[in-house]
Image 1: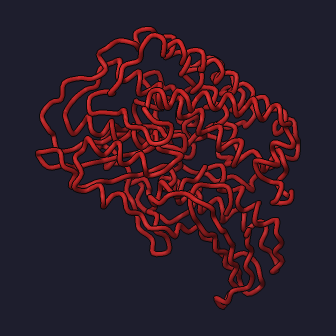
Image 2: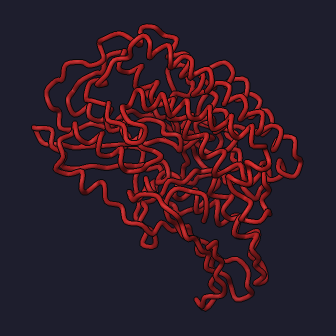
Image 3: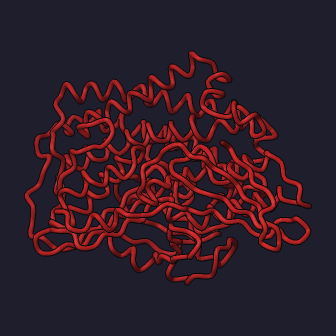
Length: 478
C-alpha cells in the first residue's frame, strides 16, 4: 500500500488453483489515544488530540472543542461558530488538495500502469507542467495561511476553547482572509477542470470510474443542514440505505443508538456497523449493515451543496453517474474535487460576513455535565469525539471514531473486489499492486488517525498465500 497516511498491509489468499479466495486489509498499528486522554482536563483535550495526526490536526481539534462545549454545558456564540466553521473549511481545502494532487490523481494523470517511480506527485508535476503545479501549490498555501491565522499554529492548532474561540478576528485579518479565499475558489475551479480534462474526457478512465471493478453497494452516512444540504461543521447525521431510503438520523450521543463497533482478531482497527441491522459480516449488497462515510457518501445523503458553483458540479456528477446513491468508489475523487470548491466558496462567504469580527467569541461556561460529544464532517468522513468526565471536568473515558474506522469494512470489500479481478491461475504481476491500491485510495485512508500513531514512510508489501497457507509470492514497493 502506497500514498496514504499511516501503515497498513494487504493479504491475499488463493485457492488450490491459484485463483482468488479472500483478501484482507489489515491495520497493524496500536491505537492509544483513547487511553492516555484519561486523566486530562477536558479543556486540554483539543490541544492534545490535534497531535493525533499532522494532516488531520484541525478536525480533531475542532471535534474535541465541540465535545468540550457539551462537558461544560455551554452553547458557543454565533461569532465563535462562524470562526470555527471558517477554520474547518480552510482545512478542507488544503487537505482535499493533498489527497487529490499527491495521493489520488497520479493514478489517472500519470496512468494506473505507469512505472511506480513516475506514478507520484513528481510524475504528476511533469505531466501537468511546472507552472500549473506552482500555481496550485501557491493557492493551497493560502488555505494553510488562513488555518494558521485562525488556529494559532500551522500544524497543531491551539485556539479552540469550551464555549468559543480564543482569539477574535480583526478587520484587517478579515480582509486578508477574503483575499486569500478568492485564490481558494480559483483552486477549486482549476481542480475540477483538470478532473474533467484528464478523467471525464478519457473513455478508458471513465470505464474504470463507472465499471463494476470499483463498485460496492453500501449504506451511507453524512451531515446535512436544515435544508438537507451538506454541512461540514454542524447539522444532523443522516443515514441512507443502498437504495437511498433514509434509515435514520441522529445528533450527539444518539450515535450510540445507530452505530456499533465490532472487534475482529486480525486488525487493530475496529469495524463499525449499523446497529439496527445487526452485524452480518463484511459484505455489500442490499441488507448489508456496512456503511461508508466521506465525500461521495456526503453527496449521496444530501439534496445538494450549500454554495452555487459546487451545486452545478453536484448536479453534473449524478447526471453522469446515472444513479443516486452512487456506488462507484472512484467517484469519491470527483466528489472530493466538488467539495474542495464548496469549502473554498464557503470560506469566501464567511470572510465576507463582517459580523465575523464581533468580539463575542466566547460564552460563559455552565456547570460541568460530565459528558460531551463532538461530531463534524472531516475531509475523510464523519468524525466522532465522545468524552465522559468527573464533576471537575477530568476525562475518565474517551471514544474516537474516525472516518477511516467507519470505512474499515468498506475498504476491505473494495480491496477484495479488485483482487478478485486480478488474481487468477496463480498469475500475478506488478499491476495488481496499483490496481488493488486504487481501490482504497478514494477513501483517503488515515491510519495514523485510526490507530493514533504518527504517519511516516511506509514500506508496503502484498503477501499472497496458497490454499495450504504457504506463502506463494510477496510484492514490495521498497
